[in-house]
Length: 262
Image 1 (cartoon, one colour):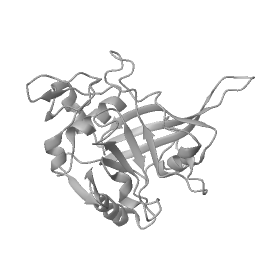
Image 2 (cartoon, one colour):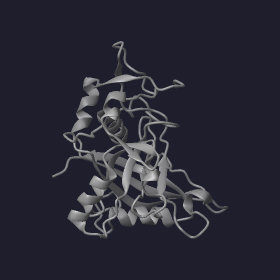
Image 3 (tube, helix red, strand yellow):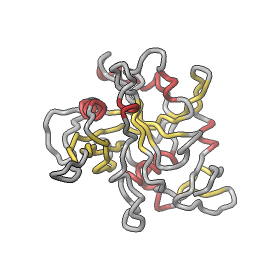
Image 4 (cartoon, one colour):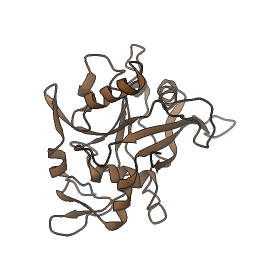
């Protein structure tokens, strides 16, 4: 993998362009239990997390970063590269990532992926990046930068999402964001985070988004289910909270995909 992110034009190969049509992305979450003397490790299904993605006609839409997420979630290249997917990837897990020592759950969940990308992008020279090479999209990123608490974040504005959710679902609707790193470790790769801005302590707030781009938000109204069309009344928010509160094993992506809004 290249040691530095290379500047690219905002264009995809024709194979990648179809990912721009997707409006939603989902992750089925399982909890990998610790093995014991009687049996090996098992997976307990927690449920499905649904995210609404930035609309393609939105001024802060980031085509490269969203297409990369979608192609990896849909496992478009898995037959060619078994690691070009999110299935089987784990979220960072340790006592320190579960709570802050005061009984308060952490406000973000990070998944690094397998270090493969789901897109190739065109360099200014006309060459294509390698599949495992980090990319950047400086022109599009420049158009959607937001100052916040002495730093910057990118993509869909948090306050716009918060206002949208308040209008649709009332004050009890949580603004939980899907983000990708723009600067620093993991930028331009398969890494993504789920950030619970509205549920974080007031002193944190939007600081949790610094150096990252918001590319979507949790669909709290949708049915989380168990990823197998089971309607158990569980919402995506219920699934996320169950994932955050468990302490028995590593949260693992056992399935993922994309869908169109109806």
